[in-house]
Amino acid sequence: MPDTLLDRVAAANPATAAEFDGLANFDALKLPPRRRKRLLAGIPAIAAAALAAVVLMPASAPSAKEVLRSAVDAMALDQGGILYAQTSVRTSYGADYGTRRIWVRGDTVRFLQVSGTGDAPAGTQEITRGGTITRYAPDGKATMSERGEMVPGEIFRSAALLDAARAGRQVTLEETTLDGRPAYALHWDEPSGPPHHPKIEMTLWVDRDTYVPLRFADHSFGRDVNNKPFDETLTETVDTFQRLSDTPENRRLLEVNGPRG
Amino acid sequence: MSDRTEEFRAIYSAHHAALCAYFARRVGRGEVEDLAAETFVVAWRKLPRKIEHPLPWLYAVAGKVLANHRRKTARRDGVHIGDRLAAAAPGDPAERLSDSGLADAFAQLSERDREAIRLVAWEGLSLADAALAARCTTPAFTVRLSRARRRLQGLLEDDFAPTMEGIRHA
Image (cartoon, rainbow over all chains, first blue to last red; front, side):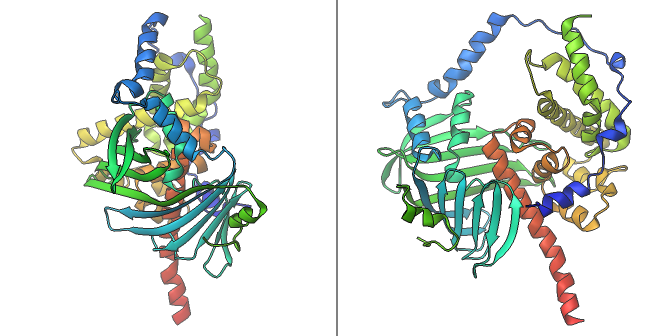
């Protein structure tokens, strides 16, 4: 299925590599002598990076690594069954992304906008299957189909969390309560980009007993493309999070005409 | 010449044109070859010893070189970077987009959104490679691209709606 939007952008590509064929001139490069790195010099840095996730976390039990691992397992998309979440998304800048329900089984995802109109009208659905995303209007009519794989809500970003920890990025752990519920808060920064390199801070709260996700916050601030200061927070709160058994009946939850909740 | 230099020469020969095209999509033509050369000089210093697929990594280096270039240019010209980005500079690739509706919508996106779309649509990278070039995880890039697509689609639909309204009332 063609991705008409990206195809349109690709067609407007203002430059091709072929235009620069034959212009390479390696000998004109002024290459400085390479600095010889001592292998051993890198080892403490690597070890420090690997330990960063641990050292910056309190020494409370269970260890930060265990919390991280358990949280990742609780959200993992490849641990069998069908993951189901109902979440509500709010932003500090007034956009109300409403309530959405998401079912995930392997690479098949069903997304249902229950209320709110942040991304799409209530009743809109998206089904991702076989590398194709199909969007359905509230009346069930398919309105758009494109190549791609949707990451269903920030709350499922367990892979990013795991990568952050494995890369030695500074992940800090905090024992806290969220709406009266004992929780762990995991804090880390996302890499930023040019031109303004805004600060992007992520926080994931997980239940202290079951490690299921409770809330996710994406806080970014700095200067925008027009050089105006901005400070925005997107918060996704988990109303329900379950791992359903992989039965034929539950698989109907992944169909556009399947049960809605 | 050392093996290391020969390896780097091969990487340079294989990817010089792609790097030039990368810059030609983002800055005026007069700056393209200098920026590509600067990217390779940085890459020479920092290239990992073993890298099987260097192009996404080179794009990541190019992104940093470009950001530095924009900062220096803005400082030299005494303007805010945002002002410079908002107004097309002479020779700006945005002026060469043949699709004016798309160009208008593209210009309204944030640089972060534009870059996510460019890496996939213009550099033709997979999501995993684009994530490497953007220096983030694949899931993070997937989210970034998905949001950017939605915003671009929304801007194009906003642009289209008044036209349809006009036809209906004609």
